[in-house]
Image (cartoon, rainbow, N blue to C red; front, side):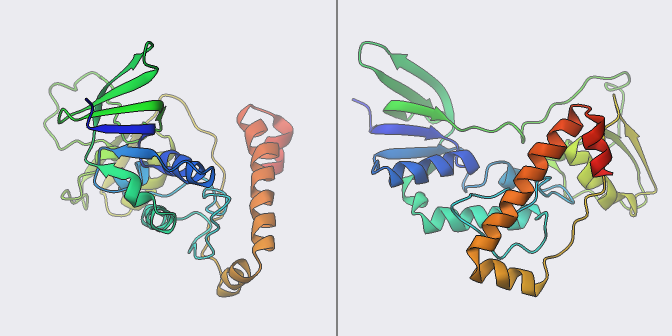
Length: 260
């Protein structure tokens, strides 16, 4: 007999897994468990700690629509504040009581005769559930490319998703492979300290000015006391992203021109 039986089993305590837990509770379903391999909620925002780590979506939109946060410090919040927001949500909605930390799933099998999922953890513990939802992320799993000279390179190396904070880059010659979101965030942070930074990119990215800034005290005061304005502000950000940014990324010249 399995030691843990639940109606719903969720794998992962990041934004998706936490949101599902909250919505299950709202639907009157309390027989669920969230299995998390780490020791805290947060997903990618717990794992990624490279310099300059922050969201590339404005904070007012990159948050739960049902849990407005008037305390964002910047328009694009940094990793630590996003993680604190997630911890706040988990505490407010009672998610910690449903989360089993330190449970990495190594196998999942569906028994058609019983209509049940059987999950096995890295420590051999067994969970059985009627419904299984995988809310696992991938943004903290390094993708290491192969390149000429890789096997003979003797210097320090690490992936941005596994940033080595014990390494001081001051005065060093640094090579960065890739130019996507993580690189765009940490390169400006290390450029002033490093003696030289060389970026190796396969193809160019389309980049515009971020226009980030701290929220003014009066703005945070309004967002806290007039939630309707905060919701309208969130809607404005969403519409701009859908009507301009998405077409621009698809090479719509009109949208690209509007964003310049």
